[in-house]
Image (tube, rainbow, N blue to C red):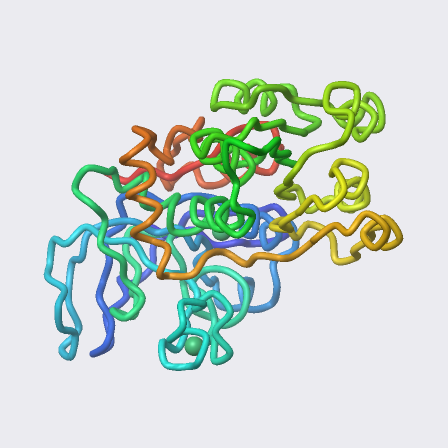
Length: 342
Ligand SMILES: [Zn+2]
Ligand SMILES: [Zn+2]
């Protein structure tokens, strides 16, 4: 099969390798769509030894059809349209059993990203534990499913934690694919969405996807710009940029008692003025992808509102153009970049 690997800093190659075979508890997935995510870009910029030494396949947003079923797998058949939860969660700990699988305390590695050595989605075939599979509804595309499997869920979940609604001015800080999806979903939840991003292309995309207004944080302090239109500040905020300056700006963007969900993890340092959080009683919390129990909710929400997660896709590439796809995603100037498979 054809597969991608990182060959150095910001270097991606496409090469031939043996098709993987499913273990008894796994299925073999024939890939139809795979997305590039912000967390793939961290490894693209600085691939760890696991990626370089083993030519580990990147990508953790797979969607495709089952090509082969392991000997002990029940309930799945060849030809089923599926995506997968890329975190190898246990399914049995307290958190998994109470609807919080995203914070499983017995996590194995992840497919194609982060801890472990498991190969990912940027290949013609991939093996996945059957317990981590999700069925894709017939009325959505496999590209939609690749997006829901990571970034779509990562955008939807914090909005539900925030309780975003028509009563809210909702700031989306960072208009990469997660921020664009939060804009799309948040506006359909009824919120007045205000987007912040230095890229004019991304701001224009956000306005097409439902943002009422957008601001460029490089021309003036973003708190001042937002307060010219919303003097008390916003009710709620999704931080999807991961930038240290964006974290520091959060208290100045929120009204007293406002709430912010931190989604982006771009910098390893975290700077946020604690005094303002205390004196204005702000609530700031983290979210980490989404719990598996929310998967069906996301499709129901999209169906009810007539929207598709793939509305945020602006570029599609065949796997052979993996180097160009990653280069473009790394510019932080596009919508979602996806691989399409024949
Ligand atoms: Zn991701
Ligand atoms: Zn668990």
